[in-house]
Length: 445
Image (cartoon, one colour):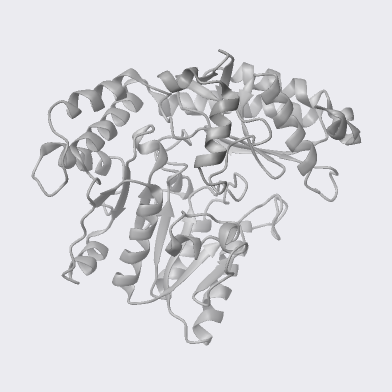
């Protein structure tokens, strides 16, 4: 706690000296120094309170007492690796299996979403005997080298696209080639994947997997049209590949209607592999891969052991169980539905009031607001969006996120202060005329 008393300028200077500049801060022009958090709120060194609207790791709220207690109590008894037989890991796997389709019944525990997606890639390749991967444009699946290769969001700024990676259009019905007025956008976007697969096969390539976030987050808080995943899965499986649903940012009840975001695509759609991370441990480093018996057996047939030193430790599994208990006890999935619906309704009113708001989309507490310069062209209002975030942060109202021109709202499922979020958003929108002039952007400190 002593470090929390250090002046902000001193902390920043030490970070700049000791930590690589590649490890970026939120709001780098004037970073926020957070010293504590509770529930949906975060506090800086001056005691200013922020509504945390983007930290989707603290899924059931910052420092939830039951999660903290579970970690503390298990730490006092046993914390070792998963090569020793203990109850916690099997109890946790059983609880997770009860939330998933019965086909997804084999579990691997890890420490991060990147580890989970890397293992999913290995599983897919061992099961299919193929190499190539189809991904969505703008996708991000993790920071390991294997995942940078399948993340257009990253590889386009690095070594470029590998020959074994095939990029399909993002199923975006607001900005993509098939929009809200298309008769069947799900089929149209799925047919793009079909054409991509056929083109790859003509070149002698073989598809191992299709990777997709169940709701693309970095790509812009996208809600794929219903039926898209089922049709894509049909094309991918026909080519001998498997479907990997990345639930790292959107699982565990965030979408409200369902526990898993892929379930929004219909009860008949079941991925071959599901990856989990971030919210799974409410801040504790936990991750998981769930898959089918055939996929797991093919991996086991290699004879190579999969061992992860800290994955599935008693403490990690105790934390995971505690998160599931809180979700159930506090009915947070239903809460995400009600609060999210209320927030979507209020943000929809802002769309009517303010032309700069081009689109409001989301489900549960996964919401995106798309800011535009012009309704006809839907030109992204990137500079205006940056101004809005900096102003709201300066006023110590909320800690939200912008990816280009899109505002991301992914708070803890326990969040209830939607009126606070909306009030600040509305207040900033009322500055629209000043924002649009762009003179304001240059003159504001």
